[in-house]
Structure formats: structure tokens, C-alpha cells
Image (cartoon, rainbow, N blue to C red; front, top):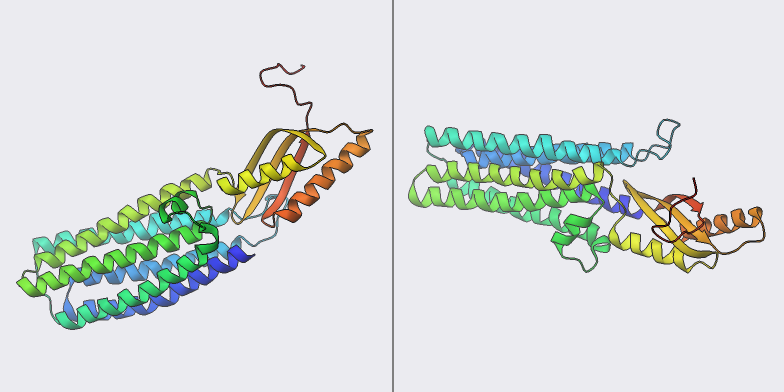
Length: 310
């Protein structure tokens, strides 16, 4: 599907960029002894693990439905996205803070400062390219929304993780660059240690924000507000439908299910009613390519508050 294709492209963009960045940072950290640089190297290796887990989840989400999973495996990508947020972001952040505290207690001089700053500048460019790929992948879904509103409303957990990860990476690189520059200007390694702690706190903050949004997806979110409104409007316009009594949507990875309870227009027979419902469902699924399941129930359409017949 187009959404899935865009997401995979963004993941591969990020994986390629972070692989090269991680190696460069690791070499620089080894030669310089910089705690901030080591924190950044660990961050980039963690990012590579992020992308690999997301690719695993996206592959599993394409499995066909089974009797035990009749609505497919689309939501498995939420599980892997949660694993990324909790295990890799948090563990990387905790290690960075721990390393920074150790460096504060036992400061060591930073060597080869200029090459380290050069590595960070290159990494900033590569991370910018990766972020640009993620933003291009979400451009169609985002529309005119602000990035924060998209972050709160998106149902694509893999793009949520990649975008949050790339933004955290850019901010972390900036922090590490400032920390190393201050260390070089003052000769005080405390700034480098503080940079390591700042990068770790940043990672943990991103972890909290990302996992909070994915938790909402795992526990069962509807389709996006725009899609809910569009489906409701479309069903209400159908000539066979007199009035919508209730309409519920379910987001299942990149797929959507909808359950409709509606008062139908008068029909000459039960067979005609069934045919009318089938026609509405067929048009509904043709109009919304992401809609893979629809459940339609005719209802007497009693006014709200009126008790049902036992």
C-alpha cells in the first residue's frame, strides 16, 4: 500500500544514514575519549536497531489473516514500535546519563577535538537528510497540520518513531557539538560530561513521548479524525441509508475497520435490505482503499434515550 511503501522508504533512509554515522562516531569516541561522542555513537547504534525492529514489524504486519487472527496482523507494528521506544531509546538514554555522571566524578581530557567536531558536522548533514526523507514520507498524511498535531493524531507508528528519532538525533548532535566546543574553548572536561547527560535526558524524553502515543494505538484507537469524518459523511450520503445510529472505526496498523449501525430506508423485503447493505459496503470499500473490513448492522433507529424492547 502507498502508506506502507512510504514508511519503508523512510526506514531505509534512516538505517543507511545512521549506520554510517554510528561507525564514524564510534571511531571518533575511541580516539578522543569524549563521553558526549560516546553517547552519540551509542545513540546512532541504537537508532540502527530501531530501524531493524521496525522492518521486522512491518514485514510481520503483511501476514495474511488466520482463524486465530481473523483481522490480520496489522497491529503487530505497534508492538515493535513500542519495543523501540522503551528498550532502545530508554536504555541508550540511561547509559548516556550514567556515563556522563561517571565522567563528572572522574573527568578525563578530551583528545583530537577538531576531528570530533568534524564528525559531528558530517553527522548533522546525514541526519538532516534522514529527517528530510521521513518528512517527505509523511507529507501526504500530514497535509496542512502542524508537526505536533500530526504527532498526536497519526496512526502510523513506524513514521512516528522514525521522525521522533531523527529529531532527537539532530538535537543530540547539536548538544554534543556545543559540549565539545565548550570543552575545547575552556579546557574543562566537565562540559563534555554535561553534554553526555543532556543527550541521555533528551533520549529519555523522546522515549516517553513516543511510547505514550504508541500506547494509545496499542490499546485501540479509531481511525484518524479526518478519516472518521469522511467515512461518516460518505455513509450518510448513501440513498439506502436513512440515518446513522452509530459508527465506530478501528485502526489496525495501516488498515482500518468500520462498524456501522444505521436506520435503512424502507425496503420491500429482507432480501432487498441485504442487497442494499451489500451495495453500501461495496461502495464504501471502493471509496476508501485503506478500509479492509466493514460490519454493517441495520437498526430500527429509535430516538436517543428511548428504551429498547427486551
